[in-house]
Image (cartoon, rainbow, N blue to C red; front, side, top):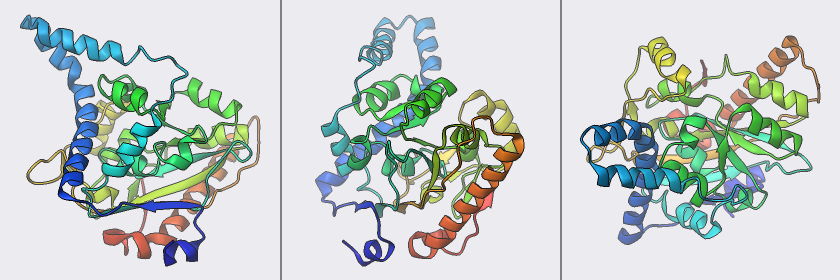
Length: 329
């Protein structure tokens, strides 16, 4: 255990092991699998239409098989533990370094929503500190994502079913988990937050995101902030035209990013220091019918809690964000 772990009394933590050329190549391949499934999933309808118009039956049959395979697993299947461990062992090796540290891990006795910031291009922090971690999936922890991504071909098969640990962020699934006192992870900024990501910045999209606070109040869940320092540096992203990109694509649950990572393969993330740091839980009261004032007050309390968390650890783990102020959009 490192001195930083001792000083902060971390509940759990780990860092990426040293890499070899062979393990590094495996890491690149796994990173590419995530990005390809993410991008390909959203682009696949256009490809399918092209194959249909050009009567490419082989490609169309393969596409149909990939789509169908994502729905053959029983709903009770939670993924392969060995595959989770394989991904967590190798996928972060291409980064300069990566680590995850958590001060509080929720459970059924003390349920909570683990809130990941910022979204970034492809949510590497969510992967680094989310449902694939041993100490999370043993608790039945799941990360909830946009339904459009949940049903994207390829992504659904590999990351939702084979790896497991991912489910829908739609209201029915969210409420079901809270009624059962099941803790879960969430990226509240969503695609809107991905749109404003840019190297050297520390931005979260939270001003209009209050739904998670309302649900937490209704069920007495705590709110646990997790901030990934380095996430915004993983890719360059085209800046500007925020309202246009939010309104045309993000409001329809579609991404509006223009990522550029490594110069020799822009879809792969840059080799940054990736530090996913989880903080103390903000305990909320249980209010079955919270008023707008209740929601606003506890939303502001969470924003201040997140700022405090960011400021506490930015000097130690922040890298390029060490002197930044957290921007609340």
